[in-house]
Image (cartoon, rainbow, N blue to C red; front, top):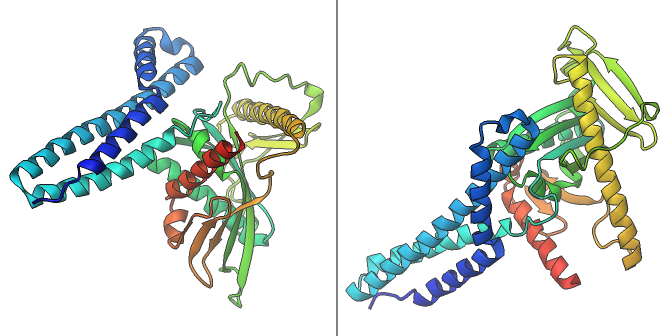
Length: 372
């Protein structure tokens, strides 16, 4: 008699039913219809910001519902195949069912992660800043490797990116960089990357080939709607510096002083932009990034006040080391929060971050459940 997988299929169908409720599939289908009507309006792009919000949310919902519908169809197909395997006593069909259940389980695991991205701003785009820390030129090289890692990750997911500013090191790498990642749930995913990242390797800049430990800080904030970033920034609170854009090794990228650096003097926040063609455009982008960071700072202050009322902060504080990337004397990437680890360091540095991100998201959900 062919092996039966009926119980396993029943368990997967129950997971799909729970996912339907957790995702609020019915509500999302209603919302999808509303967004499709809005997207079809001829005057949609008269308001560019509003149009982008509509199309971004529309794309995210379409993707979620298509993935859910594929799961439902997969379960139904496997159930038909299971029935055939039992009626015909067909070991080949039974083996196909077993393989299909493995694939279905992996797809369910991935889609269940989407239900964890339910924070207030998880669906927003993200602004990521990377700053070299201790480690000299190795730390600057590490900051550039991290920028590449996140840009590759975004590219693999079909997200759009725009680099606003890069401050190059004298010898190699980046002192700092700021870029935006646009796509469904970009902030929800990237928020788990906020913190200090540590690299251990044989330094390519050391003539004696000694082991070097380097640090870089990754800062991630959500791109909030205009109504939330309408922060008043008095002229007397900011210092605006203009300078000539430059590339690696001081190479000139622009022959005019079009790059803009804005310092918010009350908070010490510094933002720069050299990506646009004119000084006016660079200043506008820099002011937008500054307002996003100021809005996020206010949100953090409110959370800290609530934490004090609850008896202290519950989460790891800003600047805590969250992950180690070791290339010598062994190969390992380990997240110190979720304790997830992998031996394929190069694959991670090439942008394969989903497993690390998912593990931390699951840890967060467990922690929130324990504290509830």
